[in-house]
Image (cartoon, rainbow, N blue to C red; front, side, top):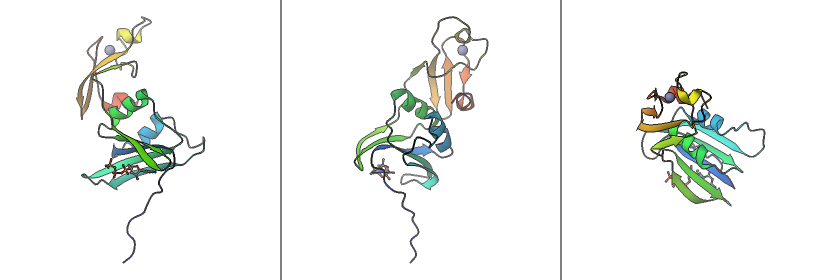
Length: 154
Ligand code: CTP
Ligand code: ZN
């Protein structure tokens, strides 16, 4: 019988962002600032069957580990993502992303009249009211940000 699975190569050192909500792999690539021009293998897989249920996306980046701010950004778009740190071909750390209940300094409020968009020295702050669908409430003006508002900023 013909081989029906395509094996994507393992990476040597870097990060595998797995179980990304399907449709969001390219958003993850973008928010990490990955262009491919830095060298290093980057693999993007979309709509691949997930062991657990349905379809998923995946992003593998060689030679990169992620900051906690980047992990929070991924959590906004893909709340079920798993971050796997790979060293010498082995997964040495596996972490489910987790949105903190309060987000500070990661996003701007989409309400132009919000005090956090004026010249006042206030740090944009949002309360996570829902993950799927995403709902973030601005501490200053009460505006509810949704996934589209977030995507515009990444
Ligand atoms: N991976 C990789 N390169 C490596 C090691 C792992 O690209 N050197 C990838 C695997 O292909 C997989 C992900 O990293 O997509 C996580 O690897 P692993 O924990 O071995 O897989 P699972 O047990 O299937 O992960 P989970 O239980 O989180 O679904
Ligand atoms: Zn606001």
